[in-house]
Length: 317
Image (tube, rainbow, N blue to C red; front, side, top):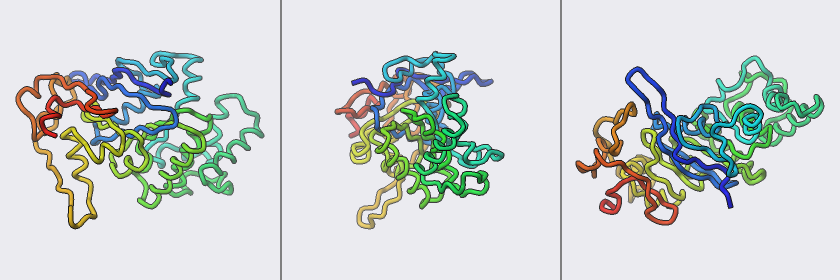
């Protein structure tokens, strides 16, 4: 059975005065239909760029993107328009991702209107259905974004993303700007919609507690590269890469008897501009040896569906 979406050695570079910034470098993975891949890492690791590149908001520098087995990396014109209907995004900031001059109903109707396949009455009916689906009272249809709280605004963004019944949605830190209680509501909404509609997610976040709650598989990124990928439960119970261990150790623990001791990361970040072939985590890794700075780290399967990019992984675990 083909995965819904797949990346093969996907890279996205940006030209800067000092050279070439490797935002996403040689990333490969698959996401099965109806599942959620969580992507985590520090700010600036390339996770949002990865999501935007996968849905063609940004053009890939190298590699391939496959949707239902079909290469969509370089499609254009009518074919790209068809792809747009199948892949969507929920942006991080519900305050800036909505047009402040457009009423809520019109915001949700816009993708439908642009598709050209709906009559005026059908547009209104579909907008009402979507509002009910994401839990927005239809009495708010004529409201402007500034009249809604953050949670409702993000629900509008989700409704807009669902308008054309997409198969794949990139959720780019959709709850990071919301209060904790509202975060839980939006996460539960996304999970309920997945159960009802079979939609597939790539969930980008820096919050490990959030990604644990919603993801089937978790991909850990560091400076543009994937350093570890495994089923969610296994990553939290048996993480292998030193960077993943450090991330997990920073999660606050409520267990008084066995509190988690943070593993401090020392040293300077490697520059993502014209990076050297060795491990990019080398300057901060407590287990690093000289060869780590010179040898490329390839993502290898250590156990079933558990991949790690560290040639010393068996020695340190």
